[in-house]
Image 1 (spheres, rainbow, N blue to C red):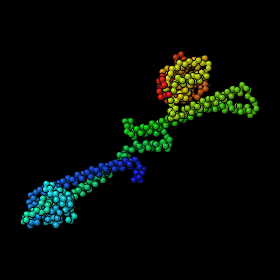
Image 2 (cartoon, helix red, strand yellow):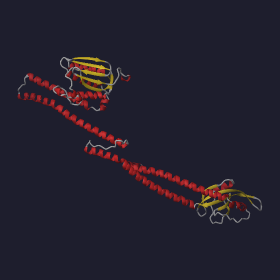
Image 3 (tube, helix red, strand yellow):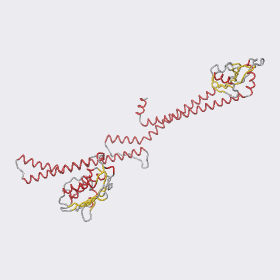
Image 4 (cartoon, rainbow, N blue to C red):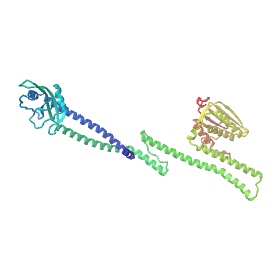
Length: 482
């Protein structure tokens, strides 16, 4: 059985569907055929029983009843002229005391003896049997009552009248019917199997196309392939095809973003690495040639090396933050006090811009986010404000009803550059000389979106830029956050 199951599972889907359809049709046809055969058999037997019962109640058998009773009681036998070739009088012990002139006689069973002995003359008992030559017959038994001897008047044994009809014609009809039903069932099963295979092929044709597309992608890594789908089709195959097209589109977009990220990262890394190599070569050449670099120049070189190393570390940290998967970030999400996060970020911003005036008006707000990522996002926003604020300028920070605004009084962002400020590695042409990798605002946008919020940058009235962050939450911490 297990081998059959394994072989079935190893078959193609269309073959399995064809087998299932053929098996289902075979079961249905078999059930109908068997039911039909038994119904016809019952009808034929009922008709035969009615014919036998009519013959039993007819004038001929009843005209011979007295002869049968007298003969079985020991009186002289009548002429025994029964009209049926299978008509006989039987005693309760099973012996035949009177029969038709036919050479064959019906075999008497124990049930016949019991019926005759009970002597219920109002009942007819039907059964199948055989004669002495082995021919099948349909038998009806009618108890006749107690016999009496005409000469002595003594009561004899109970006797019954047994009448039978040959079953050859009936069995022939049933055999012909069984053969016809078998042939029709066979044709139906074969036709159902062929139809099931045709339907399976037609129904699985889109799956074949999908399989070919998947194999093509696996073989060539070509993610531009698409499976045509009818717009108004909503079946499972159409949904699967749409899902595949969506998946390949997402993979292609992800690959393009990955390639763009690698190219942009390489470009951004080239500048600090080139500067580092140049400075280190100058220091190394000074040591090798024995020509000392003037202290002021040496100090400037070391400061440049330190700045480039800091920029490299910041760029690598930003790249690591962008490379973290959504699952890794989701494991650290918890209820965070946005007020406390902004306070911590403000402390760091004041250290980086001691010459600036930073004012803050913060109200309590709790949201669900990754604490470290959210603080980094707020720090990046404040760093931009510090970077572009003029010396002695003011930065205004407000947190009201879950909306954080950071307004600086710097040069502002041109209107045509606003759509690009959250792109990875994008930097305003006017800010290329300033330190930074162009990833800060991209990290801000992703962190806020993962927390279910939104972030935007706009030009402020009177000059400067306003960064707005909206995060869902509540002014009080939920009970389960304790």
